[in-house]
Length: 323
Ligand code: DGY
Image 1 (spheres, rainbow, N blue to C red):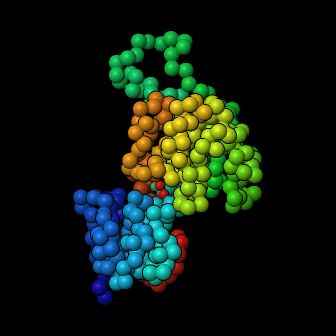
Image 2 (image 1 turned 60 degrees about the vertical axis):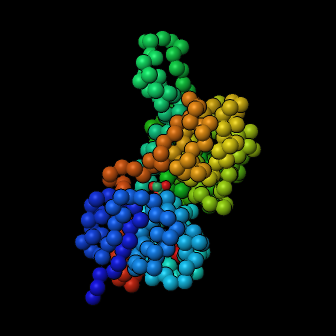
Image 3 (image 1 turned 30 degrees about the vertical axis):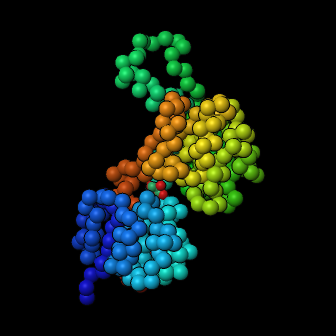
């Protein structure tokens, strides 16, 4: 029997690409260019499985063609707001993602952002590299202490809980959270986390607000003018979730007027574009969507996709089936 045809939309971890090539009739994206709408449509027409990533917009337009051959979209990433699940379902596609394997890595990055923005480390490094450092002095680049402060989590899924564990046990932080779908008591064990009835209650009490909710319609601009108004003047916003959860124009204003003290961002509203004003602000840490970017995690994510499509080709329900 012919091997299933698999099209991978971007370069993946080399070990995963090798496995895909060994196992299937695999087409890789050798120059790693982002695929256009037409290329994604061609992939859907010509493959049994298309393997997109979180930066491929698999929207209703892409999925609106009537000659789709693919049976599965094996997405490489936990977030799935880049795929129109309704349109995919209507087109008869199974869609999978890669939960769990990137939890620790992404939580590490959220804590990195938190520490960086509180302790002004990006600013400090730029200062030193620019040859501006004149030596130690008591008032030089004083930041904000993290230990013992209140961390407010918006969303309390796996990644948020991993952030909470690091913050509570590593930095003795008090943890508060809001999640419309709260985790079980077992999942919260050892975190001493206090549930808040609304995001507003989190904004009002937290020294650091860290976002861990999905992107998309339901959470679009959840963090906007009102949220910033509710936050403490010395508070910091951390976003390692999805860019469109934050109204970037409102964020710039809140930072400009001192409504909040700073922000650590790994994701942006119009990635890879970044609101230009943010690039000029010293109290903002900006990273290029690195949450899951370690060798180990990217390999694990790719392997999880392979596991999902293998199950699909074997006529089984993939472990991470979304629709
Ligand atoms: C995801 O998986 O959704 C991240 O944004 C990329 O790792």
